[in-house]
Image (cartoon, rainbow, N blue to C red; front, side):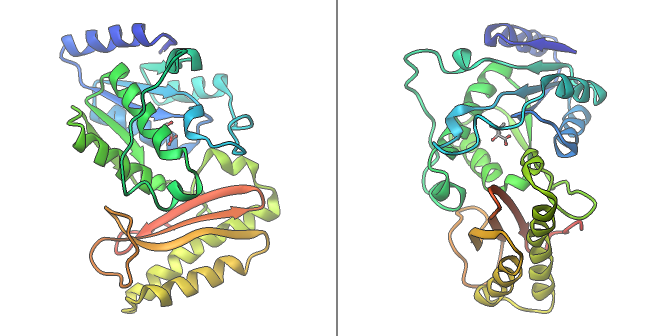
Length: 285
Ligand code: PAF
């Protein structure tokens, strides 16, 4: 497995893969791998001849007061884990390489980024779409694999790829969960034992919502009352948002009809967790 730090070197290698007719899969990450990341990598490996994984904690997607400084980092651990799933390259650029002095260019997807995570994290989507565009230009992948735990991010990236005619396919993978149902996230390490118990209210409320749906309930307000009640009944939980949205536009849906996602962002203690469920899809828990 190669470790590459320079964007130019990565571009040269990517070009040589393409010239040799090799299909390249890409998994962009901020590191501190968990089983969810490894699943994305296994899928990339399954779908292509070469797998490139990036590790870069992107400052542009954090707003002031968020956890950029304390975001967990452990490159040696990540290196070992990536090699166990057969990654061919880890691309690990520095801030100076990704945002050189005088950097002025950003990519923005409109409308659908203004709600949910875009509302509570003002810099988030501009940072994500800008860094992903840059990484796609450097790694030149044929496909990139994203987790659907970050459902809005996944849909925003798909929209951007379509709108900008980017020459790659976006593959989405179902959320990977711990045995108790908690969605895997690098931020789960922040949770204290009692907070972890409260954090399970997210997945439990998603399950309750699907059960209401299965019994024929289609009124969003009724479903959301149940969801909010379940989350707020747990100590230390504060809802940032809990809503039922159109999966493409992220507008509110009064009734659960067509493609609807129940999306949650909840602060458990100081840790902000997100989770979601698309009605009618399997909730593996
Ligand atoms: O989902 C993430 O880990 C990040 O938002 C991403 C896609 C790697 C961009 O920094």
